[in-house]
Image (cartoon, rainbow, N blue to C red; front, side):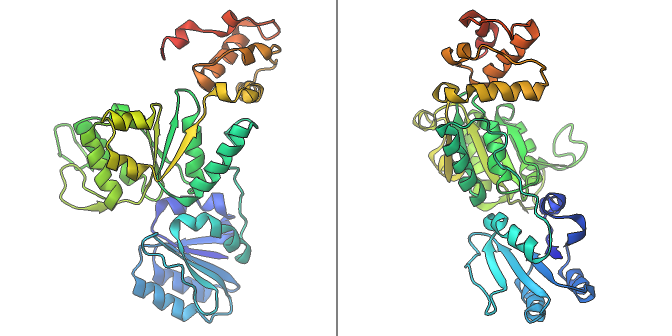
Length: 367
């Protein structure tokens, strides 16, 4: 049995993803956890989240350290707090919270729980060398818990990469925000929340994106559209984890990972002054470049078949060579739209020409 002490609602919601319901119990209070351990008959493991008073945690562990039923205990700490120390008997460990996913399988085995192993890159279609390197990078960066910036041209699949990076660290849903829709007063209200009557029309208090993403990830799409002023406000939160809702003086905290996406080269954004250097340094603790489709054409047939399977088409496009001859400036998004259009028009059995593939109305949206 695994006993978890946490006030984090995202970790609580991961229960069904990680363990069988009857093999895992969650407690917000350490005293209630301690009482439940007294009543438990059998071996157990402990997972204690950060946020509790160190005195309370140590008191609990001192009572349990020599309990023969305790098989393993892990205390989660932030990177700045963690010293990677281990108790004398080797059963009680202090680990970085961003390494939590590495410890869950062993906890599950020792506690007789069941881990549902997720393929973190199942949505990344293809088997080219480019994709194999991308999958390896997602796994490495994703489990580190660091902030990430993802660059890729429009339609290249950045959001799927972002979601895979997120799920490598946290099974709970991420908050996805389109930065192009947030500017001025909208940015403060939607990003940090607002109190009731903070401004005209604010009929009730509302949590912002950073608060909703506490313990999870905040995926920021089109990060290049944020003004330098908005970048400075977000930078302050990223540095301290602290924020105030609009209309409040109370200081709140949130621990969320930032995953930013842009379709413009970062070097050009910095050189032009559209992205602050200090802001970039904070959100780009790691960087992933998603290659355009023209640089991994060996994945095109797999992408066609994946789209056909997803849409449930009964037939298959026969002339794949025509797809290989085209440059796909709109990347995967354009390819998916083309597959759908060919199936609707009944051309799946035809020999295809360039004119059959090019959709001027689609390309006009990007060029």
